[in-house]
Image (cartoon, rainbow, N blue to C red; front, side, top):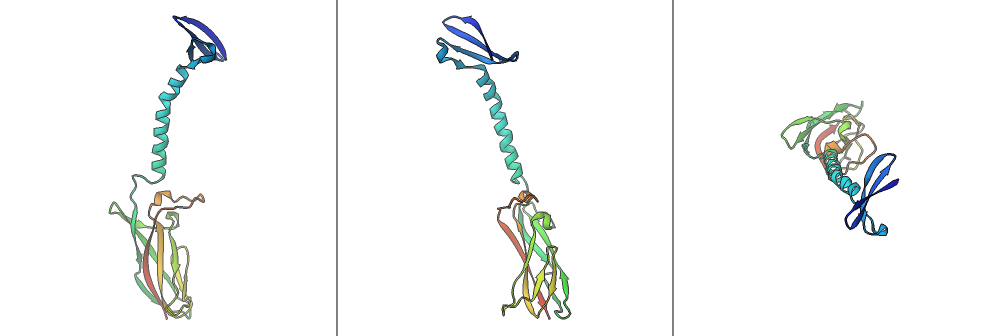
Length: 175
């Protein structure tokens, strides 16, 4: 960085350059008390823009402006199949959103499925990630579909979505 001195009444003005590019100006009566002027003003001018853009990206990434999931409707609401031989029932989860729209949910949305035990504590059925339930013993169970309220945060990159979980249920009777 080179320094060029220009005269200023009562003070010394220093032009700061590096590789023939103007970096800024400094002024001060005493070289030990020099204050950087232009480079700081230039930086501050763009700092507000950068911070505003960064904040906007954070809001967009967190789902701001996107409708939230308000409920899940599981279909069929009630089903019956055999346990011997093992019968299967396919369930779907319809997501209902805060802007009064709905669509089918999937694993990409963070949808997960689980089954309850029977009233006597028996595992009567299992369910896969696509909503396919398979009966293995007699009994009535609850099928639960769960997904995060803010689907915009759910990305398949290992980041855990910490928004509130929304659930929907249905019943399955295994005979």
